[in-house]
Length: 302
Image 1 (cartoon, rainbow, N blue to C red):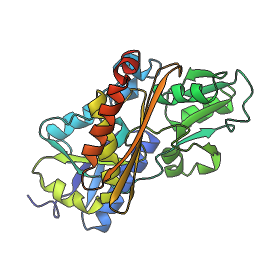
Image 2 (image 1 turned 45 degrees about the horizontal axis):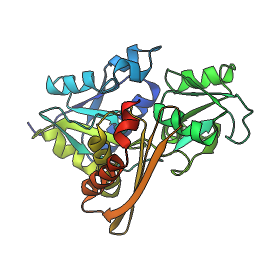
Image 3 (image 1 turned 90 degrees about the horizontal axis):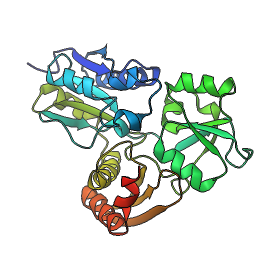
Image 4 (image 1 turned 120 degrees about the vertical axis):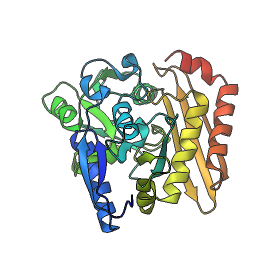
């Protein structure tokens, strides 16, 4: 079976953002001469509208059913937000491509951080964001918020929150960048490993993997491989309060990483440089330094 003559089936969640991502990959494949269609798959995470992601178990909530469909050969390609993808890959699957990364940073909608009143209600679904916000503004009331981007923005606009924090990439992809009041630097709020990047997943040794290689962006891949190696070394949970931001500079790679107690009362930060050709080595090395400084105790409290 030749991938160039077959219409590839792309599996995606049904949210507006997930469908944007899948359509973006489909358009890129079409420009490269590969036809595709999109199959919507509901995941465990889509059914959970009240429980926190940490309470629900964290790993694979937005990816497991899609990966199962890949293994069952009912789809050929899966498109994920890389930050949602567990660091352990199921047997028989591979990352065929990591396209060029969008902004990896977090953004505040509704107000800038400085302009928020004391005891303002800030909504976030992320333990990592909440913990780091508590460092910057311990007076804020950090409250959980669930739902897709539109649902969260609606909750903000009807006054349930004074501000919310979302990934800048998702807002930009949906054409909602005008809603952003402030984009945080990595030193203010260190992003989630892989944030802003897409993961194009296929079966091992499948023609679809070869068709998707055209989507791969090496500099983005090196950065996120470094970040994910750090996360894997620390325990691998994509809902852990771990921040990691790597960026390439010539032949070099720079990594900033942060582990935070859930209430923001304690944190560890570490940075290091390495080779762009060995991104995972740099990630593991920084993780080991954090572990030697007590990161395991902070993560155990999460």
